[in-house]
Amino acid sequence: MQQLSLTFEPGLAQRSRCLRDHMATRIYSRGLVDVAGKLDMSPSKMTEKLAGSDSGGKSRGMTIDELETYIQRTGDISPVHYLADKYLRDPAVTQQEALAKLASLAEVIPGLMAAAGLQVAPVRRGR
Image (tube, rainbow, N blue to C red):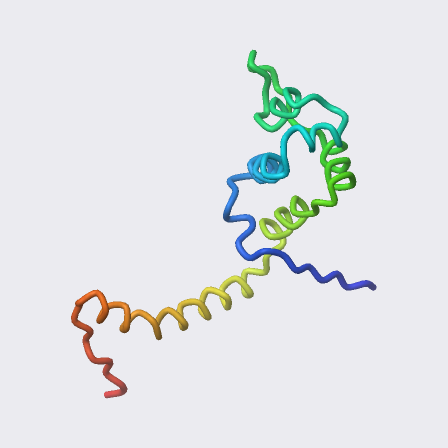
């Protein structure tokens, strides 16, 4: 059995509402004309696919084959990372990450409150 290890940007799935939005962000940041050319389609057709429909409201979403072609021709594997981040997260790991962030914030908050001129109540330890 083979093990697969993924390393990707934290919070990737939280930055986009859906895969279509993620793809639109990536494609527009790379340059719509350049990416459309790599996929052998016009920029206007690419825009329709990213919008999910044409100007008349007819469905024009990106196909799975086009997604694969995009990944292959651009080398951008972030759509795969997006899906993995969104659907393959271990809830226990997510909880541990959140607890670690809370612990680091707990150390910083009193100093921030003092700098903001707010009173910081002393922390009571034990009974």
